[in-house]
Image (tube, rainbow, N blue to C red; front, side, top):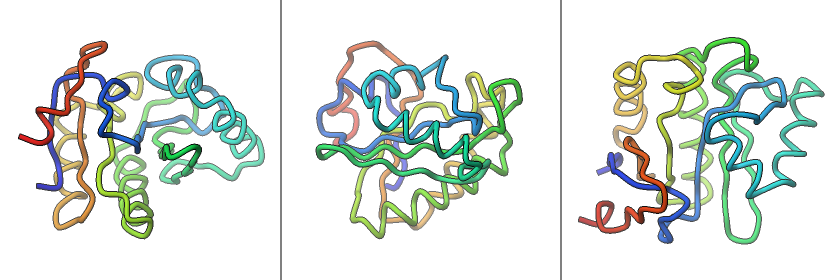
Length: 159
């Protein structure tokens, strides 16, 4: 199945080495799950910030970062931290991410509730988009629908 909804903490799930999250395109990762990405991969953050400053990262875009066996997909879901995400930007960035993942033989990507937290979208709308874009794909999206700090979701993923 190309999509699985689980309870847990994607950063505490050792079988995952690829992650995605929604980003603004203004170079700020100051709230939500983005703070954890910024903390874990500071060089990724600096590169993302430079892309935003140079206007090379826009809604609907994907910025892939790879470091020491980890892949991070930064998905441009909203113009700035002051604006809301759009379903169009979420869908376009997810489609691009899945293409890039397939080209790079990535089989699993951990994903939070993209666009439905600080992005302000309705989770049910985003969830429908996730089902639509993942249909027929080789990449498995592991959606951490219910965040539980420190909980390894490996058993939920493989069962």
